[in-house]
Image 1 (cartoon, rainbow, N blue to C red):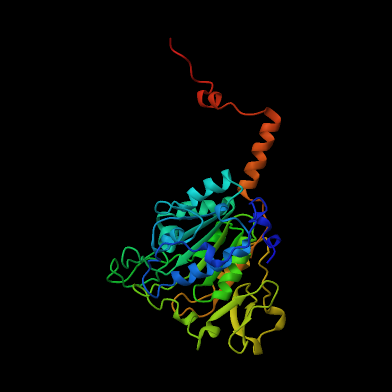
Image 2 (cartoon, rainbow, N blue to C red):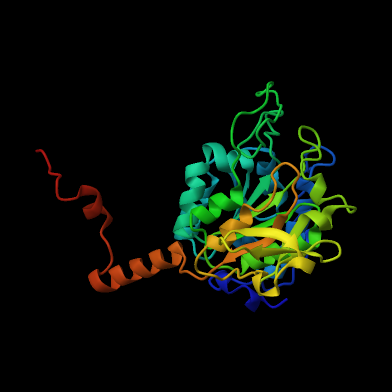
Length: 351
């Protein structure tokens, strides 16, 4: 694929040699539990990276704390294993100060949405050039099975033996509420779809949040089984395709419509008014429809679960605007004086 497909990376130096997935594998032993969904995500990312056409030394993976946070050790690029919840903050500093880098954030549902919640939403609203991959297994895996911000209400875990009383976060809804310019959802075991979403995220200028439904086979096995089981998944998954009517089901017999009250719902194609069937528009400036779609699924049965790109709108990235602002200041006022800045107008010398 031509690197022209990724205009958001126009400032990042291109590689002068053709790379393969093998070039992005380190000599470190990959240490996740056997059967963990993280293996599939790692393989997909390593297989996708050569498409970017970038030099490995211009790619950075930043993680927080959690099982997913081992990721930078297994990517033969630069990487940072930061502190709990702060990966978006560290990555923001990199992206703003180094436009020659492609910056990727690896995080989990606990890392991103609990202690890291504020850092995540502010990175999203600022539209910093980050690609945030949020692994969602609905549990704390690294600390051995406590409930997380995405665990369903009533969840029995080591920390909620009588069942969780919390209402769970929907990461896509949170991102859309924070005015994120790119929001998508995919599944660890669907390599083709995962790669398509990564491709779209990489082409986007600004923050791209990709929620990845990921299985923790030790502490929350089967959390997404209705979306993985080949016998039922097509009945449960709504595949969002920009510009196409939202029709799904193994026989394409279900659709999403907007009713007379303005609400969206799922109904049978045979009984639906064709004019009421919604056509997906990821580039709509108003995120209202994307938000409504993010609330469509049943959090317990997982029926009517949309996957794909919910929103992809164009807005200047924070880091590009910061670089332009700095360049204009230098043009108007000349180079800055660090000592004058540090001393300010309220300091004096004592002899």
